[in-house]
Length: 265
Image 1: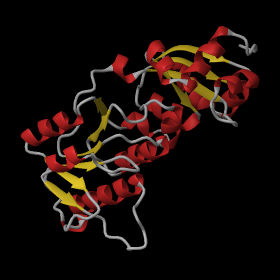
Image 2 (image 1 turned 135 degrees about the horizontal axis):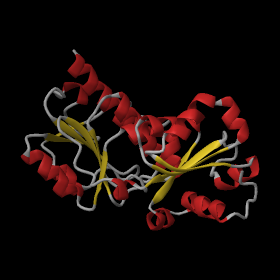
Image 3 (image 1 turned 120 degrees about the horizontal axis):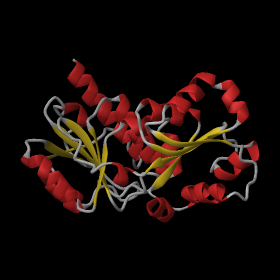
């Protein structure tokens, strides 16, 4: 059992929570907590290192047994002291399990996931927003997300936590030229709809049964003029005049669940 907080492994893993640059250099990112770890293992997502405490092992014997048997996806399994786990974690009260997962770019090519319904996210900066959108996207059964490369890093620990483990079930691709990606989708017969506050058409009136990609923009500035001009149609979300705007994660939820309602109907 690892008991020293000065062990090189502690410094290595802790750095993953502090810096996107460090995550890129190591080719790893942190997966914190039982729920996220469970989803990663259930999704057969490759883990370089998994750490847990003796107390956690006693409380989760079945999951620990799965981890021991999961040699195909877990390269190294370590039992650590409570102090060591606390030194690694980015949260104040870690629940006893943490892992370092293989960075997506090192794991797959990130092919465009959108075929019938997806989201394009431009310059999102708040990890809590992006995490909530990822979680909703899985719940609403969309194909996946396209995210501009100037958005918050996809492997930010706050995003992983905010998805409640659904990060591992959501197909995602980042792009440095999101407009070009939208045009590729349009060439495949997928309509691009922009969410714009003053659009005359409500999202309730749009036919989401057709192949569609929904464009959502930055928390403060919304969509860029370039993407708005590129869109086939624009929709608005009806709201009181006393409210200036809605949170982007809320907007995504409203649009995606309207799409789900129409498609199931």
